[in-house]
Each structure stands twice: as C-alpha cells, then as structure tokens.
Length: 139
Image (tube, rainbow, N blue to C red; front, side, top):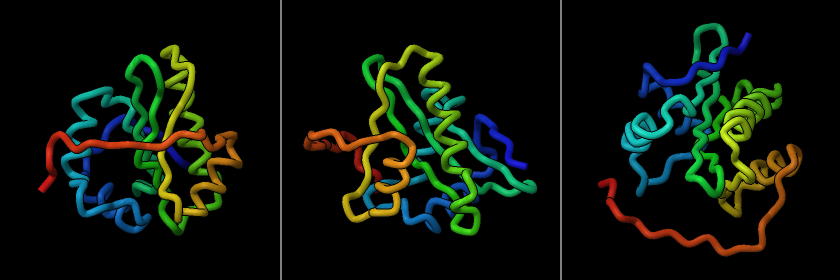
C-alpha cells in the first residue's frame, strides 16, 4: 500500500527515481533542487512508498498567485496503477487547502505521455510562452 510522507530521508533514492523517469537535465542539480525544496514548503515535497521503496514523488509550491508542480515521477515499474494521479490529488489538496486558485506546471513538448496524463486528470494547455532566467548556476 502506498503511503505519502512529507520529506525525503534518502536523496540518492529520489534522484535515482528521477533519472529512471527521464526528469534530470544537465543544467539542474537534483541534489540542489531537493535542498532548495526542503527550505521552502518542505512538507509539500511528497514521496510515495510501496513496500518500503520510494516509487513516486511530487513537489508542490505556492507563491501567492499560482501553485506549481515539479518533479512528478512514478517508477516505470509502477506506472499506470494510479500512483501519479494519487500524488497529484494530494498535491492539489495541499494547494487548495492553502487557498491556491490555479496550478501551473511545465511539460517538455516532446513528452507526449506526460501531456496525455495531465490532460486525463483535467489540465489543459495555457496559450502562453514559458520564459526562464537562471539566477544561480547549478554547476
């Protein structure tokens, strides 16, 4: 049975999961991302556990205007069993309980499986262009 816990004791296991899910990029240090999240709304860093193994993660955040979702991951061996939906339901509950009116997330345009998943759980594409500016390099 899956449990949701609100922090990560084992960063290596989480980073390995993200690697297997194809979430890592060379310009983002996942260990720094974890450390940053543990400083801000750390109880919104959710980790799903099955049989004492980390099988899913999601980071939720709220800056007062929009909620954000990052690092939703489900172990490939556990995909299509409802764990991604369960993680998102909990993240949405946290955000809604905090008064968040809307959730945003970013999906790489070639990640068609993720696009389909988010559409199935009620998300739709906003007609916006996403810009970013790196303030601190993760090298």
